[in-house]
Length: 259
View 1 (cartoon, rainbow, N blue to C red):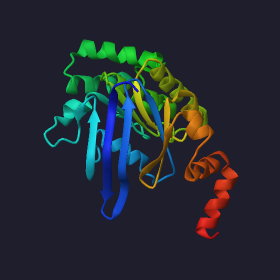
View 2 (spheres, helix red, strand yellow):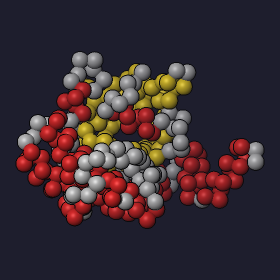
View 3 (cartoon, one colour):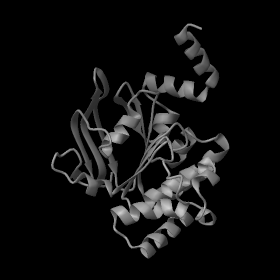
View 4 (spheres, rainbow, N blue to C red):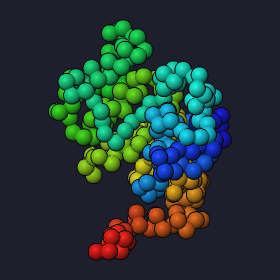
């Protein structure tokens, strides 16, 4: 593995009596793409949010680029400027155009002047294939286009690491492909990426490693061929069988609810 860009050591997170993360150890090398998969409630998104301290860990340490994010004395704003995050929802300002959504954080956080911010915005809208939508407002964009604007907004800040939390889960199926194509391009460009996803085709084709979580722990960690193609753990096999066979999942849910 190359130099760890993200390192998680003994990470715990509890919400009251709910122990969501139970001692996570994980390293992601520079330029690696790691997809995190697992059932709902397994702690995937909480892990992601702990990496940039959107959630305060209950125990353990997180390092990004060699800096301990969990150090009480860390300049978390400086660390977060190196981390881009894309959520399930797009979180665009509805009263601003696509370009303005990209230039506002640059000017306020990075203190770029108007001209420089506009140039970076144009470069990154082109990067996600939305040059022609530069002056459009979010309401005039499809969900997939809005998510691509959200990705471009993160890229405009010049991050060293990108975190994606189920970036396609809020999209209609026909809109998913364009977003995943942008993410493939980032991977090809060498961006370090940690992706919480249910898109198994993307994980198999793009990820360097796949991490399967369940019950707040890492159950399996390996190449896509190992974890998706030939999982060793019974919990991984059960999850994948349900994910890849909707009929089986429906039967299981009916049995769970007693219907």
